[in-house]
Amino acid sequence: MIEDAIKLIDLGETAEDDRTAEVIATITPVSRDETFQASQMQMKARYRMEVWAEEYDGQDEVEWDDKKYSIYRTYGPTDSGRIELYVCDRIGTV
Image (cartoon, rainbow, N blue to C red; front, side):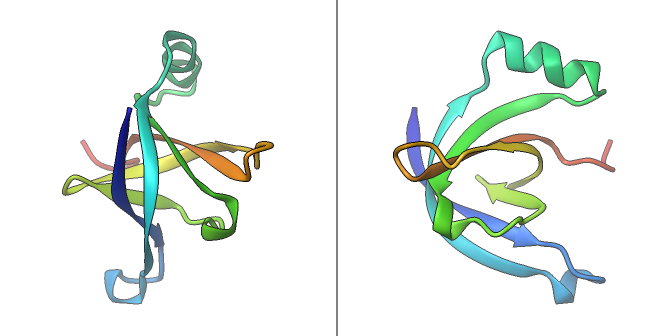
């Protein structure tokens, strides 16, 4: 488990139109079950990132450690007030 700054990205029409917000997230690898479920949707699951629910506003992507990931599902908010973001390799890139 890692606590680190991530950038939430709300995609615009062009890269210049993208809106970003930097937040602190708790980052963990996804479980084996999550990896399997994502593979059923032709995605390669990477991480579960927990952020405060009020900091997440439906953004499409996450940037962390100089790499962009697509958010393919969310869970929460949990009783702790956090929302789980499940991210995969960026959709549309090879």
